[in-house]
Image (cartoon, rainbow, N blue to C red; front, side, top):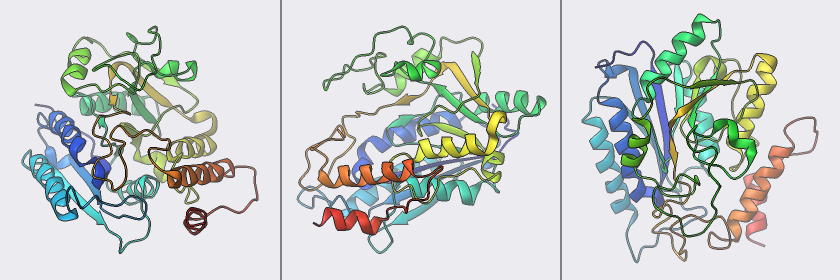
Amino acid sequence: MIKLNKTYTIGVMVMFYEIKMFEEYIDSCIQMSKDIENKDNLHFHFCWNQSQYFENIDTDKTTGEKLREKFYKQIHRLEEVGVNVHIDEKHDTHDVYNIAGYRRDLNYHWCNKTDFILWGETDSLWPKDTLSIIESVSEYSEGNGVNRFILTFAYRKMWDNGWKELEHVDMTDLPFVDTDEWNLNAQESPKSYMTLETMNEINDRYDELDIRILKEPKFDGSCLVISSDLIKAGVNIPHALLCSGEDTSFADMAKLICGNTFVQYVIKNVLRVHNRRHPQKRLYIKNEDNPMGFCDNRKGEWWKILCDTSKINLGKLKNNQDKFFTFEDVFKEINK
């Protein structure tokens, strides 16, 4: 059993159409929690998002209530482990709420309650040793006077060399493969579907941690570990971010505030999985046949408008006086 010295908030937003792959995410949460002695140090936060501002539930296949029941069935599995579980729900009675807003709120509300904030994603899997690794790195970091930092686990082979410093040591020299038909458990692409069992087999190979330090932020938002002191310093997702780019904006703010003192630890030989093209990523959506979640015409013209608008706002964050776009602007464009 492992006794934690630190406290943790692990947060994820679950959209109604992600419900089938959510079970695998819960599997990874249970796996990383079950050997913890003082489980009161763990807080799992979930936002069940059943709002239909952009995607509508296909009521020929299911209902909102049935999807919600499936969500709580998985939540009960985690509760049985003995950890703290906190749940918010979003419906059409609330304002538009997505990943940017959720992560902003998670950071803001929990940074004064726990030592670390962990960003989960429903298509991602936490390594089994997540918590013990954070504990070890935290002890080392604090011993060297570094209290504000990011920690990332290793990625599979990525699409360009800009990500090379985050790639797993055994995968960085593989050729990147990009295809609509992903091979199961492929290491050559983060878009391939990899199981929890395969990730565990890969991670069971390491004896000692291979830890690298980056002075420039580089990460996506899946399985991201943030020291709460970094958020307390003022680092968060700007409200101008409507959706896409919330992780990039967080990185930009971290560098802006920390300057040359920014620190990111990369665990190069412990893999986390981000199943970007999970075969059950987008289900039960009316008038959409896009289970693997391709961000093209299969997702709809509304997505391009929302994504492009959010990225325009991202480009206006620094050294700029232009007015930001709002969700009202997005809906006006969609409804033209």
